Length: 472
Image 1 (cartoon, rainbow, N blue to C red):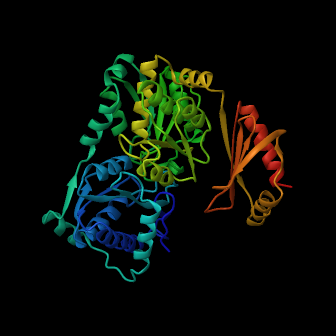
Image 2 (image 1 turned 90 degrees about the vertical axis):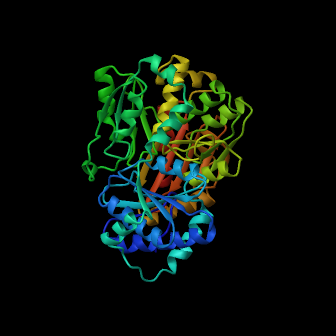
Image 3 (image 1 turned 60 degrees about the horizontal axis):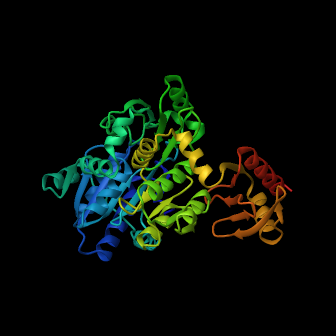
């Protein structure tokens, strides 16, 4: 069964993600698009640097060409947000397909679809895709000669989509302010789709850039290209040893951002979103509601409240955040896994764009990243965040979920519970403003535990209490 998750369909290469299965997915999606949007005939297709990604993309291009679409296929690896942007920019586009498994391990690949709103396919759309894919019984896998024939007839056109993208994101920020700040930055491309592009964009702003892991390596040196603290130790050391302004990292397809401050300390995704939102309201004078996932910082709720705006909580998955933006209920959105989307650009994550906005904020405020977050905390309240993945048996998980449902505690670490959110797991809001979330993974026997409180020490204590409850 080909199922679309929070952002596309992913599988292990040669086991689930085979040419036959990808052909079935592409055929079903193409037929669904023809029926749902008969007047939109353009489709954009891109790919990352994973094993066989371009080959999968070329096959999909042939299938869409066969189904009557005008196909624009990138001529090299391209960050996913570029495809999201192009799907929104072209009024004749039905959307974009990106062959990428994002931050997943190197033995995975994936199929993402970006709607013409500029965001990941919403649930109604993926439900339709799955129905059409389910009735595709047999497929013919197009060979290279078929692809070459479509290229010759210009039914498939190889394109470079970067110029309009660069122009758009640079026009959104005060480039002169950034240039005048004389920043020095290290970036970790993690062998992903941001390689080269991120460096080039920053250098156009007169920023001295040191790029790490920018070369081609489909195996990602054996790690998942996810810009989280445990994977970024080299970046952190580079920033401190060279005395740089900060460090940034993008994931396998460039839509997520990791960061560290001038001291080589992790500048978490929660800090990124808090500073980004503050900058939009305070410095750019936006009057924007924000949508955030259930595992994301409460700081943005309090920022919204301070500026007379609304914060909307969603299940985990950026498509739920995007839905709020597409419907007009929110104009900015972010989640714990990294990346921010805005309605002025695309309602989708973009790691490079997010970094540019942070640099703009640093330049406007005349503060380092650590100083920016301290400033926001002083205006609102101190917040720190921790996440822990707890590996359990299925029986242990069922037992814990049953107890949370029927016999939940009245306190966590001596903190009184104000109310409980059950949108996606069990989220306990405490009366003192702290919170914890206990959320089972949808794909493996793991509890994802989250805590936010006034300090890392307090978060650690809260998570210890949660573990003690689960193991009873």
